Image (cartoon, rainbow, N blue to C red):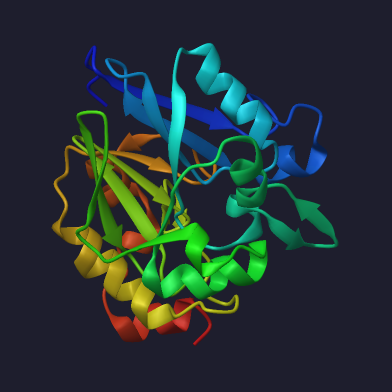
Length: 238
């Protein structure tokens, strides 16, 4: 994406840039993002998990202070909780070490509370099209259901942070609780299709790469080139 002296963007990979030595974090290949305003020294953290203190330290090392969290969806590898027989650190630790607002889509709030144990008062609920400001930088929240009911992508200027909605060479699973293949198809072919080609896509996992122009992803990602809902359902096991 086009950097400016004001805009702060940091992409962190689990097991490489934080949660060092954690084999589960290494295998999951999660990306966490820090997004903010260099002029005010404030930033938001997207999907803080695995080693929250490490993530906060990275921000502080860049001269930034975490003032809020953006949640793409409620799965434990993104916000904390139990999965595959082990526990992932996440939002509860963030509130302990760095209290701040936690922004989620209202359709995702129940799932977030269930996997993290947070209360309703811990969460700031949003609808699609809402904007969250950090300093003078504005983040647009886009509701992109399919992987989960309240999955969100975040747009800042010429960048799109897509969580598990869209990867460079795939999309999020729809066979987990809350997944909906028809909604995912609508998200990929209608909701995201309205976005401009010149955005840079930053996914929630390093599946196929760390970033790419949306124009390139549209040409090379087979999940964006399914010709009908019926063909999509067949391909997704429906």
